[in-house]
Length: 463
Image (cartoon, rainbow, N blue to C red; front, top):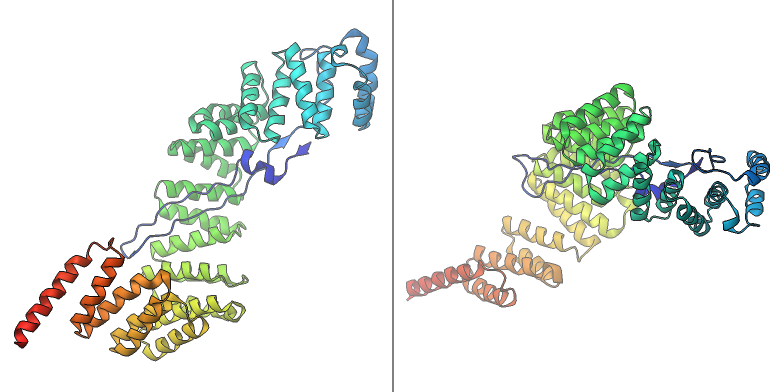
């Protein structure tokens, strides 16, 4: 048998399935992340040379019997090149369809795809209803990533009476890919009926049923698969994904936990379990999973920030601190920009927990590591306003204004600072300047008018 590489089957095998559902929580303040589940990709297996064809498929001419026996012996000895050399001595018109099919298969097995294609097409000109030629040519086009041609020849093979599970299964996948789930269900069912022990066809049928949103049928099939293979992690991952489609978060969580117990190590799945625990209020277990997913891995600030957002949306500031402290063991291995982001997150936790000296220290450390960290500048300025440290707040806003991506927020923040300081004239002048530069800020005219009224009232009072 000839196994197609994993890369080749990323498009034509049953590829990994990524299914997600939005968590719904009364504590969420911003966009809620999607749950992602990672499946491994089962590999299809293409048959290599299967030997001379039977009489019912393509007849050998009487004068070829002796030669066919010789070639059979050579093939049994694995001498394909010698068989091919003997066949290439003849013109195609001199060979029977059976011999041409043998030649085409040897070309195919030796990865001489252009010659294999030409030879198969020659056979089909002479015998357009030859099932094996359509089946093999479909597989050839599949290997060459010509999906439409592959689907055409598989469908012709099935229409002419092919009973090969592989042909029905491959047709099912191509229909699913090219035309959607409803066109694939029947082919996958036929493949599963012909080879009930082959999990590939049931997995394909499961994918088609799920995509067709036939969730009851998909769950019934999946339950049968789990009953027969209870220690297969991918089946539990499929059940988790199906449960998420049905918004059954508890069942999804139980299924994901089972997949972890059975050995699934994909970090995305561990994160999905943690998300579900957070959603369902199991904060200790969620934090344990988050810490485990980071343990033994190089510290990744993108992942750390993602965990930070999940926990802070739920108001779990103590858990955030635990997570950051656990992550801090690898902080010195990061670049300065990432270290700056790390200390910014710590500062935000300090502010929420009222640890102002620590917050001030961590803000400063963040800016020492990256003076152009716009988020640190804006956050530190807002923190300074709360502490009525208006001089520092103005300084940080003005530094942030020098950064193009922070300019708008920094100017609006500085205008708010001037209002806090009751310097309404400075606030008004700044807002007018901002609105002239950013006319998309449609709320500013109302604020500008309000400040103008305040200033008129103040001037009248002074007079």
